[in-house]
Amino acid sequence: MQRRWLLLGMGASSLVATGAGLWLTRNRTDVQTVPGDDICIVAPTHAYDPASGLPMTAPREVPAQARCPVCGMYPARHRRWAAQVIFQDGDVQFLDSPLSLFQYLQQVSRYTPGRHASHIAAVYVSDQDSGQWLEVDEAVFVHGSSLMGPMRSGNLPAFASEAQAQAFINLRGGSTMTAARLRQRLPEDLQALTPHVHDRSSLR
Image (cartoon, rainbow, N blue to C red; front, side):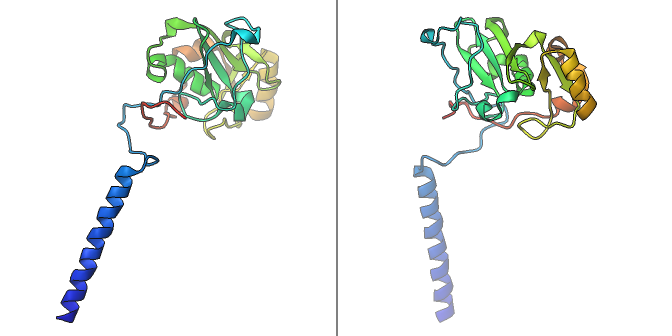
């Protein structure tokens, strides 16, 4: 009899603890639920600042708080991999790598709702050697080298010239690719590197 009351008491305690845990979970603001497969994060764009003195479509330095709309990383932490897309109204979206950039360009409206590829005024990538901004169509990209990008998988380092890219290939391997080729279709091994699941709330 005593054992039966002990077991009943333990069961009741478990139910109380479970109920309390559910109440706490429902009332906490920092608990994140798992979103659906077709949902993605909306990283906010950064507005053009006329006081900067820069032309509206000129490249800008990456703010420390900027988040990549494709993978959620901070592009400023890996500055020589960073890329940026500038829209016709001057708003800019910063990305953590050329790989994320070309994934973004294929599905602009998914990653920045209300925007389309036709709204883009300029696209820039970082020169892997100097960190200088390059217009994407003037850059030379290397695919298949031993150098990993910020996500530790995949790579498309950008260079200002064919000679620079070839010097890199001599050390790290790989082959050159143009932006025009990458816009059409990413190589098979890079297509498999899908971004992580997101939700449709703005990143903080």
